[in-house]
Every structure is written in C-alpha cells, then in structure tokens.
Image (tube, rainbow, N blue to C red; front, side):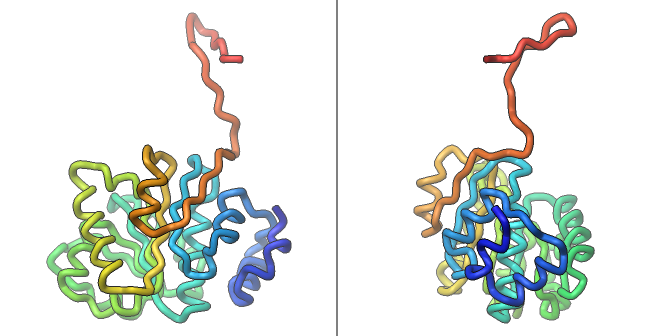
Length: 221
C-alpha cells in the first residue's frame, strides 16, 4: 500500500520524516498496525513472518513516542548482540534522535539514559533498571518487546513477564508493542497484554516445502 494513502493516520512530523527517508510503500503488517491504532497509543501484538516489516512497526512506535508524544521509548531484545545491532542501526537511520544502549552491568542505573530518547536494552538489564528506579522510566511512553514469544521461555520468560506486569501497573498510559514471528497462543497473549492482535501471512519470499534427495528437491504442490 502507498504510504500516501495512510497520511491522515500518521502524525505530521513522522510522515515528513518518512518522506525525507524515501518511504513510499507499506507492507501489510505496517498498514494493519496503523489501522489498529499504532499512532493512537494502542497496545499491539504483531504476529507476522520473519522479514515482513515488524521492525518498521517498532520504529513507527518509538518515533510516535518521541516526536509526537514528547516522551521516551524502550526497545527490549533478548540478546546483547541484538541490542548492539539495533543500536547501530537506529543511530544510523535516525541521527536526529538520541539513541541509548544499556546491556552491561546489571547492578547499575545507567544515569546517561536519562538523556536518551530511545533506549535499547535486554530484558535482564531492563529489569535491573526498574529495580534501581532509573528516572527515565517515568517518562516512558512506549515499550517495544522484540521476540515476545520468549515469555514462554523457561530462562527468560519470568523476567519478561515481571517487567510487563510492573509496567502495566506503574505506568497506566504505557503503550506496549509486542513483536514475534512465532506465537502459539496469540489470542491469549494479546488478551493478557490488553492489546489488539495484528496478524498477516505475507512474506517477501514465498515459503515452499519440499524433500531433498540425491541432489534434487521435490516441492509440495
């Protein structure tokens, strides 16, 4: 879908920025998220295939938090390596924003984050920031949780569940955006998050199944 067709649903500052960056087309996960209330501060659970455009949904969300709502955003990922990757990507893509990274010492409040617009962090580190009562927490407008299906993970799930529970209790107006390509119970999870479920099967490359034998692949019809 042409992004111009959604102009009336995108805040002016964000639309202008997207135009400057050359965005012309929206993928299904992106325009469905906008229709579901992404820019109206609604909680969303976005369940679409890998490479279907979920990261841009997250970028829309933190741009809205910073440029439109004048608050801060946190982007929670499961791994330090992924946090570093997102930090470098967003620093490059959005030089006008102050992007902060926090994934190291768990016994630290990382006071420099008070000056960041968008904080990239892991769930374990964010849990530590909550316990240290980091001042920026009170200014959070949006929290994006990448790979939110890890709520069901035995090691990371409990920490992530505690984080989301505390955020929902302490920050009544917080917007939570959950992203995942693989959730077994999306309806149940979206209900727990009080979120609108955004689902779509579109992917940039058609997924085909087949059997490989003796150098040849026989695809299912």
